[in-house]
Every structure is written in structure tokens, then in C-alpha cells.
Length: 407
Image 1 (cartoon, rainbow, N blue to C red):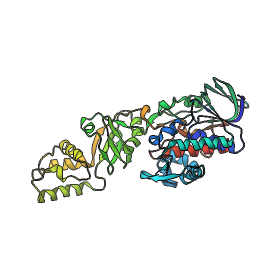
Image 2 (image 1 turned 90 degrees about the vertical axis):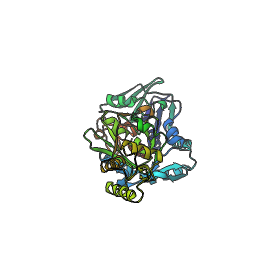
Image 3 (image 1 turned 135 degrees about the vertical axis):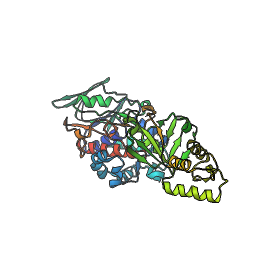
């Protein structure tokens, strides 16, 4: 194995493959190191094996999905390579795409393998040399570039792209080793937490709702002072361990950051005000006083959930016998139901990592390090994460592309 390359990319995931392809297309001698025996394992398992590779959102709406600070950092990358451009990139590579619910873009074939195969084909056609089973052990800065140590021997490089990913899905080989490489080259790594993971909830009433899916409710995470950190109106799945589905999973990073003080709040009728709900109950009592309260709740809520809400509000009676305090408690339970959530199910179930290489140490127009010239940091290794829906792949592809164009 030759010991020097103009561009050396570490990590053959979405960001690393995109960086290597664009560097090689510029005529740079490019080698891509992957510690696993196969490239792109996370691509293969994403989206249940279907690979939700991007979103239909664009511009300011797209940037807002990552939060104000992270969205500002990604602005150039996302506008230089927005979702329509990413879709055109894969379409030209022979991967037909289609839009699905929640603004998601998937391959028409419903096969993540087609996305990975296209990237590997483009890499080969561009002249990228991919070396599998080559874990990096050490990275050193030298006067003329970088020296990377592997079990196969040392490799020198003029430019180095770190695309090793974070800590999520350790079954794909994720160990967070890239954080150590970045630190050794002068970078700050912010605290890391699991993100986009199911939430662990111990409340017995919630676990008794296992299997119920809500599509019209809103869910938010509150800090210890009751301040709202994040609110999502996306599907919610009740499980034997707590909460899953896009809505709750989007909150996982905030739950973890709050270190055990988080509370999740449900609004089970977000299109109806508390006053409207109370007036509806009063009208129902006037017309059908003998009817049980559970039958007067919004019928869009599953019966098992309506029964639970009535029990929690201590309102299991007839409409005629529903006293004002119980009625108001029932309305509050529908609009402002709260449950403590200490943590998520952790990195083993997380789709992405929150935290990573500090963004103020990276040039957002090139992904080149401000601390170590010639070094580029891309993808999940950065302190960037977005919600479920193709946003994290979009960020990985866009940041990888910028690095490849500059390295």
C-alpha cells in the first residue's frame, strides 16, 4: 500500500464517501479508509433498511430544523447543496427517488443498498481507493501534512478529512474514536449525548398504552423550571418501555442534555383550545347528561387513551355528574399532560449523536479546521444534529461535499 496520498478520508459513511468522491473528481489522489470490512453500514440500516436520504424542506425552513446555532453553521453547506441538488445527484447516479409522508425522500426501490451502491460506484469511477478493515490508530500533524497510523502501516497525506461519525448505533462499529483524533489535533469536543432515540418512561399508565399511535398530537420537552425546550407535532408511539416515533425521538437530545430533570408534555388536542374543550363538555352534558364522560372526549383519540385520561383526571363518571373541578382537570389532562422522563434508551438505539467537534473551530464554507490547516471535519463528528426525516443525512452529504471540494 503506497504510503502517501494528497487527500486521505477516514470513515466511509455518507459524509466520507461524498468527500472522497468530490476530492477525486478534482483530480486529487484520494484514499478512503474504513475500519469495518464493508463501507456504509449506517446507510444500510437507516430508515428501516430503506434510507431516508433527505427531505423536501429547503432554505430557511430547512436550516431551522437544526436549531438556530447549528442552522447558521450549516447555512452555506445546505444552500450550496440543498435537497433538490442532492436528489439530482442520486437520480443522475441511477437511484430513482420519491417523496413520502413527513417531507421524507426515499429510493423508489425502498432499498438502502441502492443508495450505498451508487456512492461506491461513483467513488470507483472517480478513482477513489477504498481500503476496508483499516482502523486508524493515531493521527499526527507533520510539517508537510499528516501521518496516520493503521495496522497496515503509516500513511501520509497532504489533506485529512475526518468523517468517522459519532457514538450512535455502536453495532455499526461506531466508537467515537474521531473525537480523540480531533482533540489530538487541537480541537474542542463538546459533551455528547444520544439523539433521535426512544424515550424511557416508567409511568405505569403510559406503558399500559403500548401499541397506540397518535398522529395529531403535539409533544414537548420542558426543563426543570418548566420552560419549553422543543416542541414537535409528529407521530407518537407508546411502547412497553415508554415513547417512540418521530415526535418523542426528536426530543431525545434535549432530554439527555437536561440530565434527568426533563418533563415531556402532551397536547392531545392541539387544534382545540382549552376553552373550546370545556364548552364542548358542557354542551355534551346539557344534551346527553347520562352519557359517560369517556364517550364525550375527542373521538380522534383511541378509546384506551380516552379511558386513561378520564382515570388520570378522576373524572370517570357521567357528564351530568362531572363537577367543575374535575371537568377542568380533565381539560388540563388533555391539553397539558406531563410525565417525567429521565433519559432515552441510549446510544444503542440512537440514530445520531448530539455534540461533537465545536462549530466555531470549523470554517462553515469549507469544513476546514481553524485550529489545524489541512484538516477537515464533516458529518456526525461535528456538533450538528437534526430531527428525524433525512436531515442528518442531508447535513452529512452537504458538509462532506464542501470538504471534498476544498481538500
